[in-house]
Length: 496
Image (cartoon, rainbow, N blue to C red; front, side, top):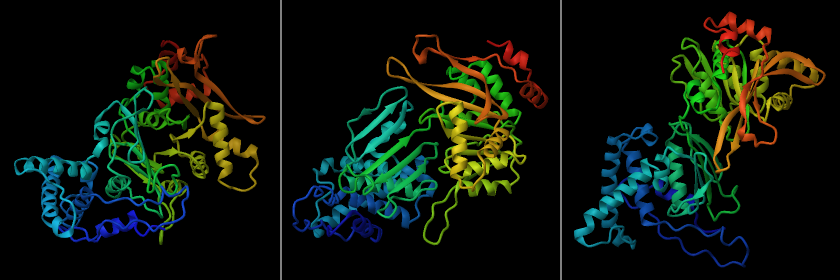
């Protein structure tokens, strides 16, 4: 075991009084040992002067309560000014005390250049505290959809419709990367930093972007203390069904139909593979919800944002911790049933919460929506059935489960991603199926209303979403009774 590691260093830094130099020195070299394949993983990081000052700045801000917690996610110009001033002060304090501690100077230039160097360092420190450090240009670029950080010195980005590309930027060290991301997690909404005891975290930024962090020892191919970070950017490309039509994700016919489905309070499952835009599409559907409805969202990691609905409450899960019980999505679905919701919107269903949401649908809660991983409508219904069985409700006959699903769900919307010849990915609605409410043999019966049609011999991306011509009488009657401005013949049959 090494005599010193990043956890001990972080502890030493955090226990230092504001304005003082942290009381630790460069660690001694590790004791000699027999050569092995894991020597590179056991090499402890070296603390740089910049990191020492960075921690001093954070401590001064924390102890002095110079910033509100929200500033770390959404800083104002005044917040930047406060941090810049603290950074200048801490750089000067370090430089004064460093020689007596045997530490290198952080600013070691000619007197004429010292002011400019001090300002440059203060900006770097401020960007590390409030901004995104070396990945700031990509976080500001609206075309960047995803950022992959594989250790401190390997960063990839993926722009909209493009393949991932490696960029020429990096963090200073694995230790600096850990300090940086923990600062974001500790002060962000619903987040806590990664540690050896809890080496992973899910986090949501204020703009809706999702962050997943996982570190050594759960990451095996990175160096000692290695961290892998995935940032999935929130891009508000489509806010409503009109935007989806402009992007060619759906047709005007389909938009008219989906608008009536939401207003008519039918229960909807949105399915698709990874990266097909299920959450974004769910968000778009909520734009058609009546502003007077009381809406409760239930998610694992908060992603849905419904500020356009004044009577909206968001419930999230909680991990089990010392002295705290875990709160699951299934628990929160049961909680929201006591909150008199008009609609329940479930984030991605992965387990027992499927039982809870189906029971809610079958006991008078209409207009519910959820997302699930599946490649088409048929597999969506299979996936719902599998998740129900995984909930462990005992020896319930499959026929009874299928009947409950058939009676609960009204519509399945399946999304897909198509790769274009130039390497771009395009997201489209592949099919919209009406669940008829019956079970035939081993299959829940469903009928396609819109389907992806491709000419024989042509690639799948050349297809288009077309109306199937189906006109289920029960569905038409329900929509025309509940939605005053909807007429099937006018809005579906006669629209091209």
